Amino acid sequence: MRPGLRFALTGLLATAAGIAVAELMAAATRPAAGPVVAVGGAVIDATPTPVKEYAVATFGTWDKPLLLTGIALALAALAAGVGVLAGRRPRLGPAGAALFGVLGAAAALSRPAAAWVDALPSLCGAMVAAGALAVLTARAREPAEVPVDVGAGRPPRLLDRRTFLGAAALIASGTAVVGGGAAAVRRVSGGAAGRSRLAVRLPAPADPAPPLPTGLQPGFLTPNADFYRVDTALTVPQVDLDSWRLRIGGMVDRPLTLSFADLLARPLLERHITLNCVSNEVGGPYIGTARWLGAALAPLLREAGVQAGADQLVARSVEGMTIGTPVAALLDGRDAMLCVGMNGEPLPLEHGFPVRMLTPGLYGYAGACKWVQELELTTFDDFDAYWVRRDWAPRAPVKTASRIDRPAPLATLPPGPTTVAGVAWAQGRGIRAVEVQVDDGPWQAATLAPVPSTDTWVQWRYPWAATPGLHRLQVRATDGTGAAQTAARVSPFPDGATGWHGITVTVA
Ligand SMILES: Nc1nc2c(c(=O)[nH]1)N[C@H]1C(S)=C(S)[C@@H](COP(=O)(O)O)O[C@H]1N2
Ligand SMILES: [Mo]
Image 1 (cartoon, rainbow, N blue to C red):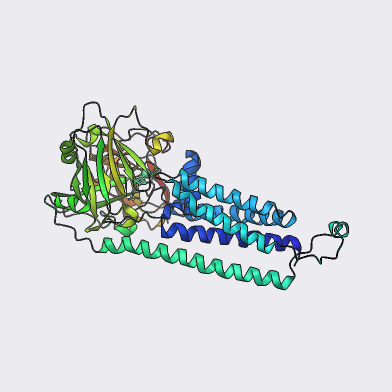
Image 2 (image 1 turned 180 degrees about the horizontal axis):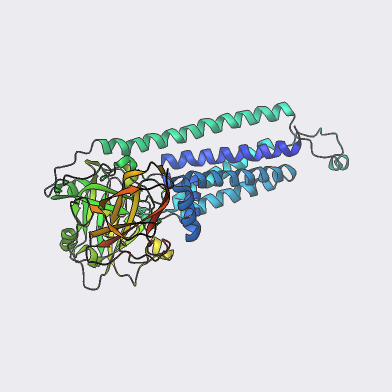
């Protein structure tokens, strides 16, 4: 084996062994302190907003696996480099391992809600890596009788090939066992949150959602499995239901602490509400409608006694996300809630189990904190939430928008009668009218399906006599206040996209 290759392999093996040990320690104690997730999370938080925007727009939900692959490749290159250096200069081995350890520890300590013990897995992993490097780059013992000046002139004699391969195989299999153990521990504890979710029995709502009106097309409700997911969590937070508490504090007269059972014991509200992401492009997919079950937030805030001057509620999640919502929006009579149920099931883990906030009429980043564990009353002057620190707007009401779902963009259809259909939304204000334009023709009124409330999207359809040729279809909406959806195209940053959605189809 060429020495370069051998040293690179040594670096990879030693690093893998260190990471496996660190991951096992973290999995057994504090999962967020594992170096892989900690470094990934730190990279996400440090990524400039335009890059994040690009990643979400280009890769959708593949953004996280791609990020992890990128980190793994960068790490592998570094590890091979450390191995080569350590092979040439054995003293550099511990230094390289220490560098990895410090990086992992720093990333773990930079995570929200980190404690100093979170540095331990990475530091112990670094010691294991240093040990493995030392073993694999060890010099074969020089015969004692060789004079020093002769020995010094020759290249160092490495472990013989068989000893090296034996040690490497031993370290590799140890790594596989420890890494497999870490994955198993994560699966079991992940399974614990999933199992406690399955054991949840949701009470019947005290205030049920009005039945859905007849005349809706399929697709009005988005099944949980199809509901878009947008968050910064590299691994889905696993919340232990028994120890979970929601604290309401900050500028309140009577701070409150509620358990999950306390929350379920309150009269529950059930509502159909459309949730959408501020990052959704015109015509984009980051929007869905569900039947949500939860405790109304306004009465809870009144029980806590919001103090004069508190104009922002900051929701904090178990993994440290912060989402700021105007107190005025929460107390203006809309159905802001702490959700425990989604479409008749306990909240899926991906959508915030056990409890998430939902504020109709606001984009998700401004009112829909998942995995929530704390509500702090404060002011917009005093605190910038996660996305506000990244220059998104502090207040973010949903903008009026509409989308063509049928036909699909660039579809080919036969001439004759066809139906153009889609959705329009302006949560809180509702939709009064939707119009469709074919090529340069006049804007024509679409037919609106009935809605359960102004907090959901509206399905619309427009019968079109398609004639042969290439056609451009556009849609625009008018909200419940009579305000027209603007044609001005702006991108999602910093407070939501605007512009009319248009598609091109071929009729042949
Ligand atoms: N804890 C936490 N809550 C969060 C987020 C997050 O990253 N972490 N993302 C927010 C954003 S940007 C949106 S659009 C909604 C998406 O909710 P969903 O994934 O259930 O569709 O969750 C919000 N709540
Ligand atoms: Mo979002």
